[in-house]
Image 1: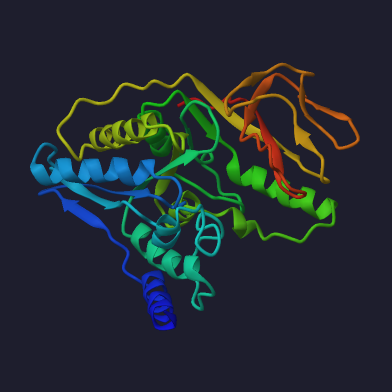
Image 2: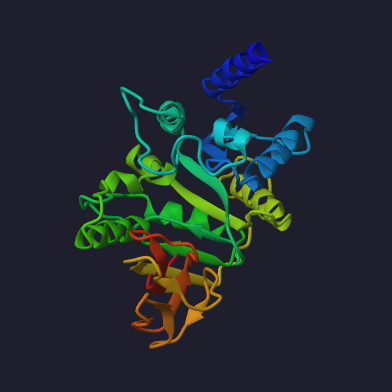
Length: 327
């Protein structure tokens, strides 16, 4: 029995350093290079399921890549996917950059992902979320030469995000992460580095391309697979990798994240059965402190990522307003 346990441990350890599967289709005419990632978080299975469906369509000839290249990575975090957990050793979609001396599994797999991202022009990262809510897509900043996230491809990225077929687009992630760090410092909580906010799309912009994070819906909702599948097909058409009509946008709302409501102490909680994208009126109660003090919306806006299980230093939820960006 002991020998069997030892052999299993060795097997599991080998899997932790096992291969990262990617599948690439190359057109015979010039075009952009797209990469599509699934299961950056191991418990988000809509990405792998949608990606594998498209791979089979490409292999069967139902879908023909005529221009450029597309690389599919159905399972970006194999350890977490095998465990059916969000993370392996830590969150792969935080602090993502090359690590010359990798300290954990996500560092090792992250080095390979960064190398892959550098080979491409555009990224579609397919995710899902806890709870209920409409599908949405995170996209990046306007063109700028600032220190936080300099960027020059906002127009291309915005059009890429708008073609996915989901009704809501959200921007302002990294700015808001900086606010979260400042709030933690104010509360004298352990300091976070700004690079903790860097995930696949931030790295893609750093590497000279552009990318978006698609949130297809609830983890367990079968419809999320269809959302992911349609989005991939739309992107292939939008970039001209396949011969297909340009997809029609279903965009309804663009939200700019402007505030984080942070959990300051145990007992702080979100108030109400909110979902990401829900509209909220000025003065309406968003959350309540442990002492009963209400936290109210500073203006008309939207709730983003409500977290009923927030711990001190984490966001109870984020607050956004209608964006003034034109796409």
